[in-house]
Length: 276
Image (cartoon, rainbow, N blue to C red; front, side, top):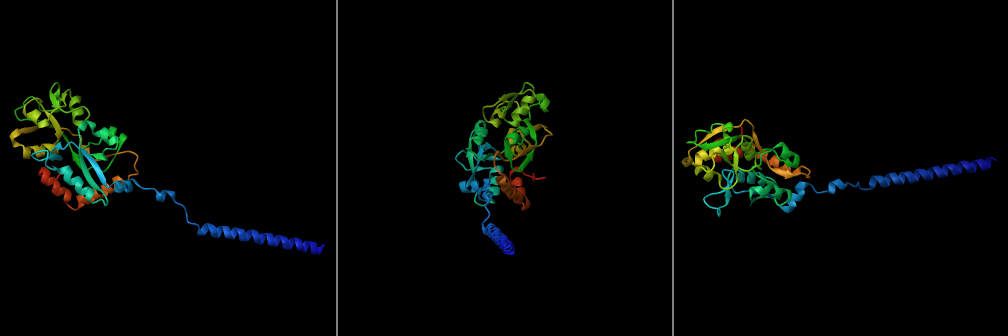
């Protein structure tokens, strides 16, 4: 009886040791196996942009002092936005900026379809924020009502009822003019329309007005009114990214502001430091 009992105890000990050995082997195997991290292998939005190599910004190419051709259309694009945004993207390794000219009316559709990565001189609105992701603002201005000096019956936005104003109802300025009862004239070149009195007024921002006063003294313009609402200008991107492209742009923009480059460009194009 004692002999059987001893055999039973020995058997239990052997089984316990076997189980312990298997458990130890499994733990060692678990410790030595490399941990899988699928997320680490996924490419970020910035990685994909660097693979493409360029960030394409849509522009009309007819909007001084931001983006335009000096003297003739065969001259390279120049302007505040051209120089500033080129400088910013030059500070993002692996990415160069390209400006692609297009008609304004098709720009947002082109952005949605992926023909452009962004559009410059876009005002940030709640409606647009619902559809697009925006980088940090690179310019802040105020909508300004611009008329010829000789125009005496327009001295505020309230005076626009029934007046002809250059613009279309897809732009912030066009919508602003319509809200005061103006009749929009979407076709033609804004300054030529104003000069020839085919429109009674144009609405752009105060920075554009500063540039016009400096570069076009022949037009004899005045600012009839200025809106209190800030116009915040930033680059829109189609939603769905992970924020890495915006973060890279924001960091580069910050460095451009901190080292004085932004101030130099604003003085060059507007005659004063607009970074306040």
